[in-house]
Amino acid sequence: MITYEQFFLDNGLQVLVHRDPSTKIAVFNMLYKVGSRNEVSGKTGLAHYFEHLMFGGSQHVPSFDTALEKVGGSCNAFTNTDITNYYMTLPAVNLETAFWLESDRMMYLNPQEKTIETQRKVVIEEFKQRYLNQPYGDAFHHMRALAYETHPYQWPTIGRTIEDIVNYQKEDVEEFYWTHYRPDNAVLVVAGDVTTDQVQKLSEKWFSGIPKGSIQRLGIPRELPQRGKKTRVIEADVPTDALYKAYHMPAKLQEGYLEADLITDIIGFGRSSLLEQTLVKNSDIFASIGAYILGTVDPGLLVFSGKLEKGKTAEEGEKALDEVVKQFLQKPIEETILQKVKNQAEAMKTYESVQLLNRAMSLAYYAHLGDVNLYQTEYEKKRAIPSQDILNWGHTLLGEDNASTVYYKAIS
Image (cartoon, rainbow, N blue to C red):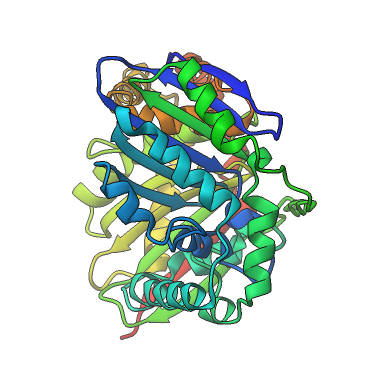
């Protein structure tokens, strides 16, 4: 367990305090409950773009990074499909600087035209470098667009197209800010050499005057169950064919999520996994292949992805993969393998909890899900899942009618 205390401000801001007097450092982590799932078609990528804008200076802080560096601090952020997370690490004695900086950009961001255009260029360049000019970089643009028909998960966090980013108007930016960057849509975690009384006083001082949101946030369209296999062929200038095969799976808090996670761990995690041993080490079909889940708040995807050996086709790869999945479903899971996977999960959880920043992020993430204690109870539930339950969910999820396959083919 990660120990914590929590309280709420009248404007809805949820604040958690994790005390660790063994360090002289403090972590200030602000999570906003907004990601690409909160965007609409034609204005995709706004959540990620806004992450960039938040470092462009606010009314009383022309340079966010400079102000933080003066007190020995550093900062960063990330955006995914479901959340946007900002974090600062600084000496605990300078904690109030973090409250000042974060509250100012929550209330007084007011991005100028120059900042909007500068960050637009930065994001467009990132789109080009990471997704368009890199081999296989746009694979998940195609996979998401194939697997989803109505849900906003149908586009990546960067956005569906560069044109969407080019067409953002100042009004779009302002509306997104006043809709989502409100205290009642945020979770603050302060961790380190701090006290709850200290954090409560600073929270009241710097955040209590910020009004809660007044713009109604749109509902998220629900994806209907898939009723037949979907396929798409992409041809590009890449070294070899690649295969991306995804199956719809339950949401983070639904039954079956943890079982799906264990399926991918057993089949595709590490060098001793079934995929690695069967399709890479003892076969000339795949150069590499893995399995993972996207881990989303709404129903997501269980994914197999791999690069083929030179001369092998994506279709051959799918046939070989399907055979391995079939074999996995047809025989009992060895208890030693299941225990090994669960032990790996425990080791990873223990390793992650060593860092103060990771503890703060975990508290924020599970608070945004609605129950901080899920951090521990979810792990305990996962350890108790029997092998037959995993196989039962495998039969439920890993059917061809539930599959979406992208054949990413090298131009010969």
